[in-house]
Picture: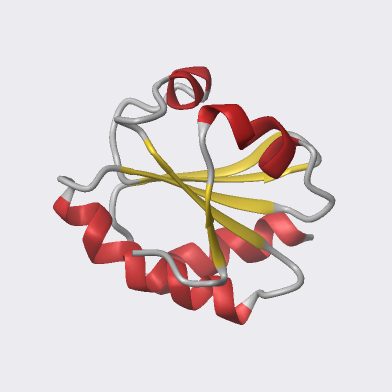
Length: 110
């Protein structure tokens, strides 16, 4: 379900791919059975394309990788977290309109 602009990460690769990233990262915490997660996936893909080079976009399956969601206090999905310099800058829980996602991204890129 990911494109070449969205990277799948795991508990093992999270530190390097996200926390040590030179660019801000949008993390999509999701699961295959989650209908709202599937509903916002195209929006996440669009944002990945529109912010290419300025924002890294990753997806992490919460069922296969339980350590990272627990570390971030993820209790519901979809859960979108924007990390910059290893710190959480924005968090969006639930399916939201694209304008809300773009607004959160813009706020974190400042």
